[in-house]
Length: 302
Image (tube, rainbow, N blue to C red; front, side):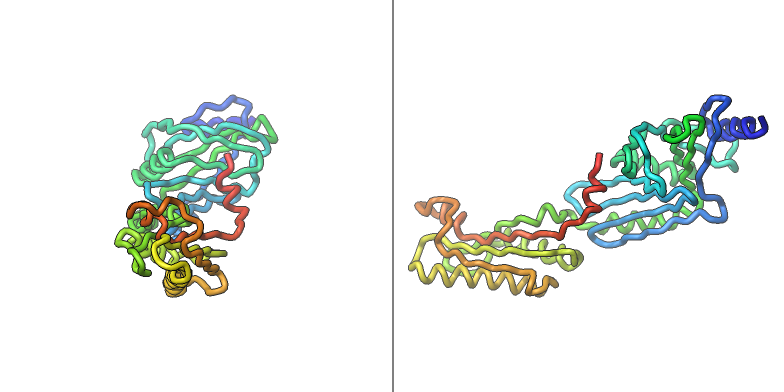
C-alpha cells in the first residue's frame, strides 16, 4: 500500500497519470551526478551526450551535410523487447514547483533497437533543456505491464556543454560523404588542367578527406575526348589520373587505397561532334568507398 501511494506521488510530481496499481520506475541523473559532454567534435560529426544512471544515455547527433540535421538517440542498456510508443513531455524540475508540464510528442520504440527522434523533436528537446526543463519519456515496461518507466533528461550542467555543441555545429562542413563519394571532374582541352568548378569540387574532396580517415578505397578513372592521336590521349588520361592521385595523397589517403586507370578516348559518355560533347568526355571520375560498418545499419533502423 505504501509503495503504491509513493508511486502515485511520483507520477503526480512528474505530471503524468498512471493507474493506481502501477509501479513507477524513475531513471534520471540527480544534482550530484548529472553529466553532459561533447563526445564528438569535428567538421564531420558533433555529438552531445547525457548519461542516465542504470538506464543508458541520450545522444544528440549532427553531421556534415548540405542541410541542417539533428537526431536524438536513446541508447538503452536493456533494449525493448517489443514495439511500443512512448510519450515525451517537458517537465519542470522539483525546484520549480507549480510550473505545468507540456506535451512534446511521441517516441517510437522497436524491438531490439535503440529509439530515436528526428530533427524537429530533437531541437525541441534541446530548447526545453536550455529553458531549464526536463524532457521526460514515459512508457509501460514491456516485461511487466504493471510497471511504468519514466526516463528524465536533466538540465543540470547542460548549458556549457550545449554551447560547445552549438559551436561544433556551426563548423560542420556543408557537404557529406555521400555528396562527394561519386564525383566527375572536368578538364580543359588537351591538358590536365581542371575547369574552375572542378577545382573547387576537388578542394571540397580534399577538405573532407583531411578529417575522415575511414576511407577504404578510392577509384580514379580518367578519360579524354577523341580529339588528337589515340596514343597521346592514352598518355593524357594517365596524366590526369596521376595528378588526382597526387592530390589525394596530399589529403592523407594512403597510396595502397588508391586505384587509378586511364581509358583515353574510350568509354565516351557523349558524342564528340561539338565542343559541349567533347567537354563531357574530358573527365576524371572519382569514387570513394568506406569499409562495412554494422553500426550504420543500426543507426538507420526504423
